[in-house]
Figure 1 (spheres, helix red, strand yellow):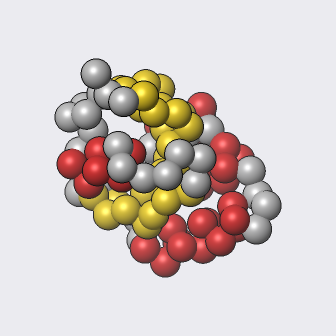
Figure 2: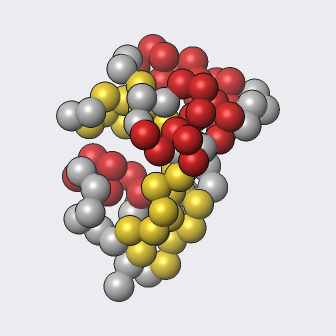
Amino acid sequence: MKRASARHILVASKEVCETLKAEIEGGKDFATVAKENSLCPSKRDGGALGTFSPGQMVREFDEVVFTGEVGKVLGPVKTQFGYHLIEITSRTE
């Protein structure tokens, strides 16, 4: 069964999401940016969501996690909760 581990940053707007992505791509630490900016309680763990299977997250999030490139910061990804930056930390098929 497919499984993935990921971390994310949740913000209210696409613009903030894009700004944070640029900061991370410029060298800022993902976990630090998550702790300082994310609206999700996972921010205290640097945005870490643990390991999960398809169907455990909202559809838009699942699609990125189970098809995107591992280790790359992906997004902005819009869901009903806001805008996410997602980093897939591992995935098994």
